[in-house]
Image 1 (tube, rainbow, N blue to C red):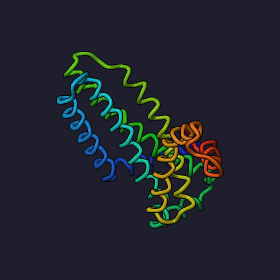
Image 2 (image 1 turned 120 degrees about the vertical axis):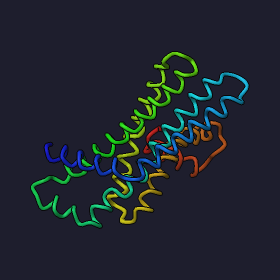
Image 3 (image 1 turned 135 degrees about the vertical axis):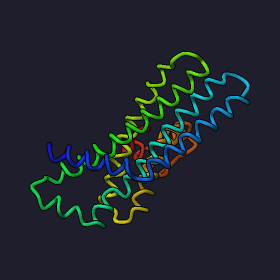
Length: 209
């Protein structure tokens, strides 16, 4: 496991230095600004609207980072041919993949933690109290992101092109989010026949994100 942790540390440092991380932070700040704007003009609970937009931006930014970074993570190793130096050493293949996963997932956990703290600070200025229940939503978002990271590494290991890998990962996320709605259509009788059977089979294989 020492080799896997070393690979995880190297992967995390590479992702933190990458420009994509700063782009996601910028996007998260923009989403929080939009949430504050809509909250100020919405009739009803302004704080609730800001929470919803904040949690939505944290989840979407984490998914976007997982799709972009995961799609190109192994491709960079192959392009630079650094993977041959690693695999030439007595490092099992599963430790290499596991180290890549740990490095990417730890970076995403750091990112969503910082964004949640920023959202907490923003809400503190408005409500003058800490909103601890936000961490429950962030916890489940972190569980969802662990599945997305695994899917991103899986597709990047079997698909050579980063674009296709990213599209497959994004499609996996959209399908996982839509599985519950598709099953509701089947239960209502809107979808019938072979199409309904295909949706039921796909929902059994896909995670309920």
